Length: 208
Ligand code: MN
Image (tube, rainbow, N blue to C red; front, side, top):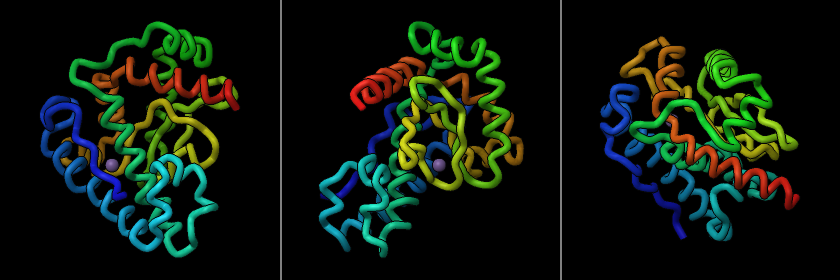
């Protein structure tokens, strides 16, 4: 079965003024769609791949046939990454996370402001296209970056938050000012969605 572009869970303009409508349209309808289309091209060559979820595909790249491994890594990663990205943002988001996820951030980074500063500084330094991530590793939160559309899932880490620092994600509005985009995006983070991913990560870890 072919993979499909998920609908954006809010309007294209919903994240204004932090993420502009034109960027959202291009980013979702063109960039994300292209990852889905290219991933489906790989599945056409190897139909058995289509029985796996996109996460399962990139979690076990070693089992993907060589002739489509790069496509699955890049476009499967692109599909997984962007599907998560739309879900962890919402209009009227932001603020300081509370509950278990808020406590875990405080425990692992000292306080929320320190976490945010460290996350943005680390992600700003990612050279070229890539992502900044908040992942669980051995029950602790950690900040990592990846190049291109690589997802921490491929190295056994579960991302609960990710920020896209490809230029297509911010150049129309922020041009070369990646740190301004990184700062702005914390105004639209949906911490309840991040908390849900955190709960999923904890139970996966406990089951492992
Ligand atoms: Mn992107």
